[in-house]
Length: 390
Image (tube, rainbow, N blue to C red):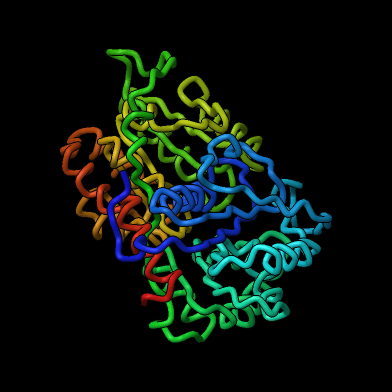
């Protein structure tokens, strides 16, 4: 049951716009969780997507109305797969939706949708409040962009974000970086951590796990979760695991799918650890793995926040992370709840993993820290910003 809030006394009409329901990305899951939390508080909620497709489609609550724009698609040269398109010609469809439905607030929940909608809203007479959520570290993500020039991403941010009525960042690091890149006053950006811990998480963590590596008496299993893309830097994790494996028996499971699969599989063979590494692909429910793993490792080169760290802690799993920009240092309170190591340093990562395997932290202490990132806490703060209370 959602907690009462001063923002939930009067039902309001809220729209949340996300670029799709594909995969298990943090932005998609966080937006879906927020939509459910707002609806549970009695608000009318539309979840707006370009198309009603994706792995998370079946998770949309009946309390939330799914609005698919179903517009024309453009094949953009820097987009590798159709499911990640942001259709520029969806702007007319978005305008029609806003004029017909007239939501009081539109939350743009990702950079894929922000650019088009930020141009669209000034063209419509509908007085819809525009709130942008920044969910990644802009400087790092722009620096590592494939094909699309870094300057173009930064130019877009400088020209679009000032159009918003309010801006939310999912970590202080993201907020500080966005203010620096765009020139926006830092006080215009509100930090609200993601709604990671849901009432269903522990129930999902108790689900059966049919994997022989997690049987009683088996060697320690390390876990990584994320898209197989450069941002997550799984090559560093694999190299660190090879160092760990040279010292003690252990295994590594990486859950996720992406464009770097073949590269990672090649590296696994080159490191000589193929018998002890599994890449099962995308898994809808990673929590049973987190609840049973000996340690969870985040090897990212950059993050917005790092939801998977929080989820692993909520499952009582020891964690190790790179001190990447931004999020992990905030989650782990500067290393108080798990080691932080330099980015792309496989030797330091291996040492940190070995120390955690040797002396695991108290699981209840990790769960208590993770509880700070609850849905109720995040939903109340989001409603304050969306409805103009702050």
